[in-house]
Amino acid sequence: MIPRPFFPLLFTGLIVFFLNACASSGKTDPRDYTVALATAYPNEANIAQERVTKYLARLKPEKRDQIAQNEYLAVESTEVQASEVPGLAGKITGQTGGYTDRGTQMCKFIMIFDVKTGKPVSNEGYIILDTPQRGTLGIFGGYTAVYIGNGK
Image (cartoon, rainbow, N blue to C red; front, side):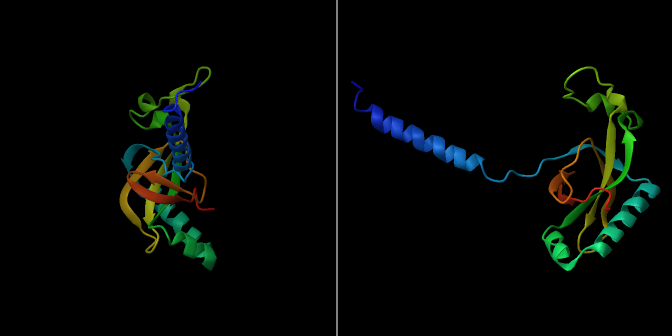
C-alpha cells in the first residue's frame, strides 16, 4: 500500500514538471554571435553601407513595417579566414569530429545599422563564425539586430 502523503507529493511534482516544460517551450532569446570586435576599414564600411541602402530600397511596405519593429540591422560586409584576424584562431573552440584547422575556418565581418536612418551605429564591426537565419534576430556586440546577410 502507498502511504497517504505520497499523493500530494506526486501531484506537486507533476505540476512542477508541466510548468517547467511550458516555460521552456516558449521563444528563446536571440543568441550572441560575436567572437571578436574590430574597426571597419573604409572599404568594409562602404560595402556594408551599399548593401543596407539597396536592401532598404527594395523592401515592400509590409516587410519594411516588419523590419521597423526592430531598431537595428546586421549586415555582412566581408568574409575572411580566421587566420587573417590576429588572435582569432586561438579563440575558436567547440570543433566536433575529426581534425579541423581553425585558421582556415571562414568568419564574417558584420556591421550594425540603424533601421530608421540606414546609417551605421558606429565604425565598429563584429567578427562572427556562424549566423542566424536571414530575417531573424541575433545579438552582435550587444545590439539585438535583424540579420540580413549580404542584403541580397
